[in-house]
Length: 438
Image (tube, rainbow, N blue to C red):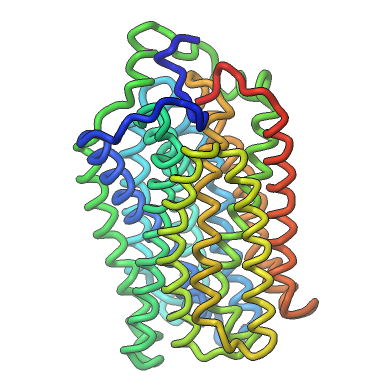
């Protein structure tokens, strides 16, 4: 492996300040990612009106919402398809091309959802069209997120890979914040009847516009230096990249899947699903629930940056270890307070949001696990398959557990995944670094 294909994240590495070009690349990548991720997650913030509008009125409310979560989950099940295909061409043809294609594929179905007819207009065709649009969204996001992490990691100077990956992750979480703020504003300013009649369409129509803005922004980005060097030296994988991943890097795939499990739990349960759970399980009013979620989403953006800074100083393995333990403590603190009336909810939820920022460490763990010629394919396969398995089942599972097992069930689920991530970090700390790592 040549030096051109090898980067370093060790905390002992020499650290160069980010240049103006570095800042431009990270900013454009993060902003484009924020707009695209908004498109993908805004669906869950409007799960309740969607469950009412896209299924028969005779369907029990809990079943309609369960079916809506099933459509939400379909987006996760479609992720591996988009991720594997785009990663293949990303390793063979270039990171930038797939980076731009993915955001275009996201904009179209998001705009279409805002224009879809509802059940009263076209019957069973309504949920089928919604499902189709969600699948296309899943294909797009499957290529976007892994490709974005690889893109910024390979652009980052030595000793700045942790912050680069975390800044992109922070950008993605800004998309969640935009979705949360949009939902908060709509639910606060518009009567429920208006939201149900036409207001729910607005965030999807805005998302379609955001997506095309992101496509335009990415035309200013350049191919990564690592890929350019590999292409010039004819080091690109001549075999099917995924075949090499599965034959030679199975351990890296497994470890990446395990840390992705924590990422899915932290984001889905504590950020995306919690506003609805707060209303159903802890009887918080809608405005308070969404206000707290907006605070938490903003804190999450800052937390990702803080953890990225930490990675470049103590290493991604130690940052993952301590960050996972802190997430466990913060999760039980919030749910314990909620179980006792939620007196400190608006303080503890933002604190927990900041601690969820440990997800900003995870992309560095994964990009360091695979050598450059198959990095996009390896990361994409591990991340998307894990997200398909855990992401597709989490919403339904947590909703079921919260109804039947108890109000602390979501906290227990997140804690289990964080404990597994802690064990992965401990294993990596005693495992020697490989030459191929970033």
